[in-house]
Image (cartoon, rainbow, N blue to C red; front, side):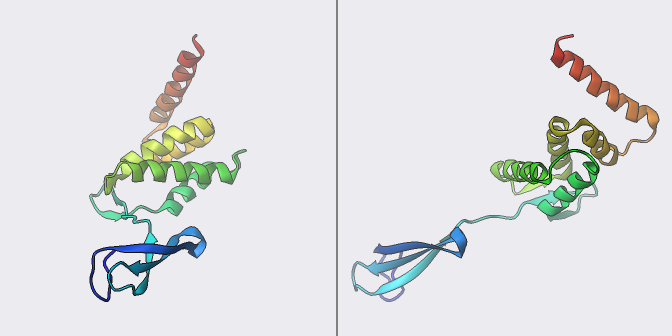
Length: 157
């Protein structure tokens, strides 16, 4: 770290402690040339993820919006809210870990449906009915048949 007084490029850390409940690290440093002390803060750099919507508009990824969709889909179902929050965190982490700064809303929807299928099939169907815009009963039935077929295939029938 460059000294703010003499601009020497090297300094040593003489004290380090977390601040903001672990969100930052405060470091006291001493310049190796002029011996003056100064403070620096280290934070995790996060770049906002932009969601590309169907109409090609962009908006920042909103974890609460996804959680709200999950809560609606799981209404009156035996799914604890903590499970939904953990799932939203997993999806958010998966999106962050791609290192892409933009993600299609369809990708988020597919991730959400993959997780909901494992959590609760009824909630999955509710979410899919909104997400996939079922046009009629037949398209809804096709989705139900696909679920039943995958269950039969995974059961080895």
